[in-house]
Image (cartoon, rainbow, N blue to C red; front, top):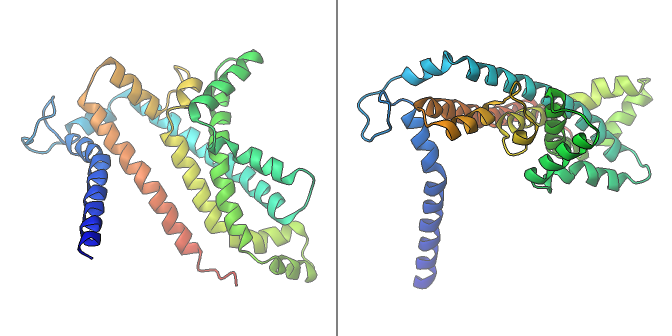
Length: 266
């Protein structure tokens, strides 16, 4: 018993150290974002929003934020629309090569982003198509679609088909059945999938480095380029904003999922 207790204590200490190792750099970035001095020193001599103000006045960073927001929003809309249709096809219908197509749509999760980024870039080069915002959008849809598809499929499996059949028995056509029965029950998964797709798109850098152009830089790519040129305190402020957005969006998705899950499916 004593050896088991010592073993569990060592596991707890090791787990605590792992969490400290993972989250300490994030905490340091957020804290240094409020540092009034040019260089990061501890203890800090006061608290200031100087670098956030300077960040808001940087036109290139504002443009990168706009690109990321537009790209993330379009990615979420397109990936969610395709994910809903694909989930309905895979769960509600039988057709040849269904499992193969399902695996094909989910395969980007299993492929490293570097490989996916290079593959799509080489394919478009083979088609003699230049890098553009459309290429960036297609790439992000490919990256985020599997997550939306998995979330919507998991929700759709739990929705009894008898609800849809009852609506059709009462005279509703396929579209009316989807609009009035299936869609409201799927809404928690749809909202969660869309927000997760937005978060993944907004935060991605590995594959985006291969697809972005000088005019279509996103915030993560902008941070990477700033780190290569010089280390500015603005990076800490920008990193703090990115951390807040990246954490807040999934939490908001979880809140919406719980809120709309009050509709009983049993």
